[in-house]
Length: 125
Ligand SMILES: [Zn+2]
Image 1: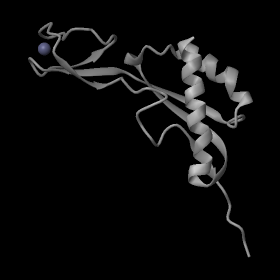
Image 2 (image 1 turned 45 degrees about the vertical axis):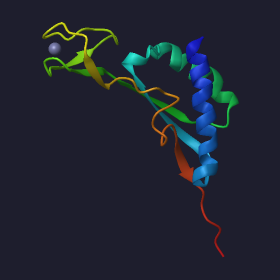
Image 3 (image 1 turned 180 degrees about the vertical axis):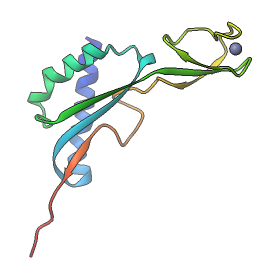
């Protein structure tokens, strides 16, 4: 299952974060998933729920943000929403387009994500 592999990769990334930012534990994970990545929303949620309790992120909340696909036609400059990566331009039916949004992969791309952490309190005295 593709989503289980993805969920494992997400948790691997998340588990390194507390060390990097000096936090004690992971309290929340935010996932941004583009509609054009072919990641099934229910499958990724199921996979995260299945493996989260056995990870260093157990108890963390997980927020899913699914971003719609958007593109700009390179022939007529029309901007439009895409349901599938190979949809043509609705204005001129052309296939030359630049993808603007919807390709966000949950285990890659933004180096700041995933992960929101509780800061470690400094030693006093
Ligand atoms: Zn067009």
